[in-house]
Image (cartoon, rainbow, N blue to C red; front, side, top):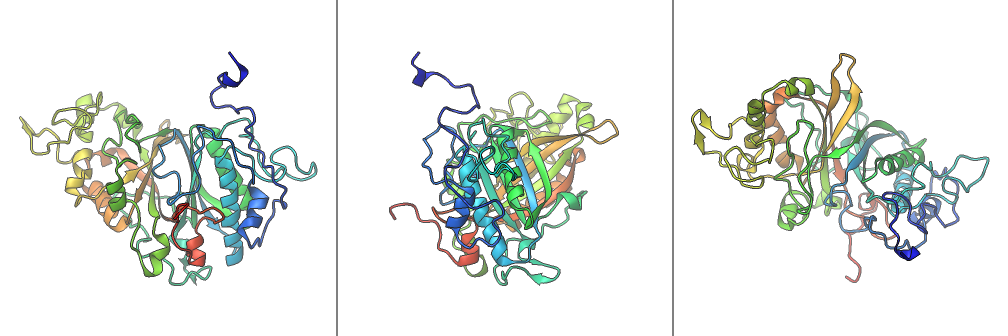
Length: 439
């Protein structure tokens, strides 16, 4: 077989594709950088990367990592901004943008990358992904309500810029929220097919943020719990059931426009046009109790068969449930089943784009797994598309008996980045929405 047609070891570096930046740059501190070009010099690359099958485009009308085909691994982290200086916050976002652009292309960040910089200084790239390909890495960044205001009033000169939809999520019935697992000024969702690539992305952004922002909480997910493309099979959650069967797919452009993407916003929230809102909930599952429940009871709680995911009213996985179909003991799909309570027909027709992951964090010291679902959903407005549904599920969903919500957050995800721009630029500079090339 000719050398140029040989298959590479899956997940490893392809010859000629390095994470190393080829652009001479400033050092890793970078406080007060005023221009996106300077930030790009410090953390990005001027090289045109070779087209590779596992690179997800960075620039676009919307941020990647939302309707992108859901990857297999996730590392999400929320940050508290510690600086009080608006210019330093903007500089951080510029540096993050340049670093993300390099990492999603499978490149190292900084002039010297992980091994070729000043021998007497810390490397500019942490290096644990140097021998790995891009692995479909996407990094999605959002802003929390506390970035705009806190108990002391407005922050960073963002008076009047807080979107009405960026609310503080209410305390739902049964919540057992932990402050250390909730909230945050910034959120970074890194998804990839290789867990080390996702962890590398968050780790390097945390390193760049030193002195300006610190990690508030983070979570690693090891298996997707929904599909965002019609080409993807429906995955299973830790209860063993197919999850996200009715999820919005990237091909559902009308549903995305109606339920996910912000459009037509004016005033304080106009900078969010083309963006969306990320709901994050850490949901611990009572695994041991569930595992002792009969199969019949498990299926009644979910409203679907465990083997195929078909609704209990009959058909196949994607058959619409018939909530009126009766059996000997009542509806075949119980009214308090998860499928029934969460179905759009019982929630004013609203839908969400779910993008959650399974997680496990060892045990709780009592011999029980600390494991469950890190729920992520993208919605056009949490006031209409999440809060009513979660309220109904907390009150009426029989599955809630096996769940405990321990973390919560809502973040405004700004639109995508134009070449030469940076994440959230429209918030700080009143920039127009993304314009595709040639328009």
